[in-house]
Amino acid sequence: MKRGIRISLVLVIGVILAAAGVIGLLQGPGLVQYSFLPGEETVSTLLEELGTMQESLKDSFPVITLHAQKSGRSLTYGEGASQNDVVVYAVGPNWYEAYPMQMAAGRPVTAPDSRQNAKVIVLDRETAFLFFGEGDPIGKTVSLDGTALEVIGVAEHSRRIGETDIHAAWVPLGTVKGSLMVVSAPLAKASSLMKVFESAAAENFDKNQDKNGTLISTARETVGQTMMLRIIAVIFAVWLLKKWITVLRNIWNAAAERIRRKSKHWYPLRMIPYGALQMLLPILLTAVTIGAAYLIAIFAVNPAYVYPEWIPESLGDFSKWTARFWNLTGEAAKTVQMQTPELAEARFWGGLTQWGTVLMLAGVILTMLKSAKKGKNP
View (cartoon, rainbow, N blue to C red):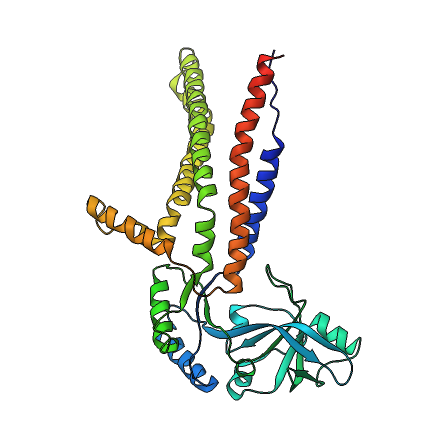
């Protein structure tokens, strides 16, 4: 009697959690960031240093922006409506290129607004409706922590993981002071350029902090958080490939046997088109198999491109491997000094992925045990 497979609920939950985590990680922005606490620099000085960094790295990072974020700000309109749970983004030049956002009305904060420290503000749709209802908010004045600002736009806004404030607003960089600053750029293709970005950011912005800023890459974080799942996926893919190669070998043997039998009765001229037709499917399947093997190999070695520091300069020197291992161990033991919302979001989805992977492994074991038990007790 054929045994049935009883899939464990733990396996199903694990698959759901891992899938949700991976989707969340892939939906995040691909950014490289350097976060730091500013010294006594004015906004004009920070923007000048941003321009210097932009010019030196324009070939590798065409878009570089600077911004700060503060939560729990107070926003009021006239003598009536007010909100005390507003997250405020103080944005510099190119911010909307690194963080694309859909405008519902008006315009965003621009580079001239940041350079001139203009008294303007962009509200999210919910806050604009709260203050102005169905009326046009453009040109109206609201007060942010006592500073009067002109509403120039309304934007769509989705709360991020870990963002407790309901409402959001965007202002020029100088409007928010005493906050963590973040230099951001869309991720370059070469992960090795991250050190170049870190060096330039520390040189320009971190002069008074003894280079204590924190370098973050959402792409590297994504790969790191999914390594366990990636290893399992590669092992499973290699196992499937091995099984498929056995099937493919049988397909080749069957085609060759059909050709051999026909060759006993047909002339060569008639056998050529018949043999070509019989071999067409095995050849196509072999090509697909080679392509699949190539994709598996690329998927398996991709982390080495994202984390080039994993591989020592000399592959045959054991001492190099040992030194690299201890260097990586020391780096992993360091705490993240400053955490951006993007990093917090990536780590939330990464934690979900890792817990899902653990549950998947436990679920597979439970499923195998249940199936074995059912087989013994039909």
